[in-house]
Length: 198
Image (cartoon, rainbow, N blue to C red; front, side, top):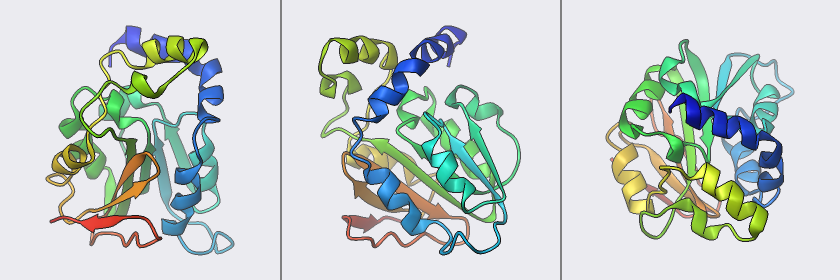
């Protein structure tokens, strides 16, 4: 991501929370079902919220992990460290070299780490601005979608599967989620449509 594009996101920060209110909350309701079972247990390990948005997922992760890093997507290839859990929601469509970013994310996982990568999908590859309506939202969309493209569900799986073999894919509202554990795929049977690919 260029410096100019990063600055565009900075200008939109004040508007981002308003856009987030339009989300149906499906991701926030689903994610706890795959996090460690009891947040009252002693928290351990490190988690990464990649593309952090308004930080709501980082707050959720803080109930389950001792350390949570929330990192802007602009530096995805510069992130270093080792994480037990990595989540990204509605952000990966901003990445220009998605296969390289996915490979780097995988390299950040501990031997038993889990990756949960969620993004909005379209029936066909599409510019994401079409679903945003209204004057303020159209202006926001113009800034958000420079070069962005949503994948179809099928293309999402075709791009993510080679990097994360055996991943489980789940539909969550308008989004598609990829769940993968370093040792084995994560079960995502929470009433959502599910399909495993290998």
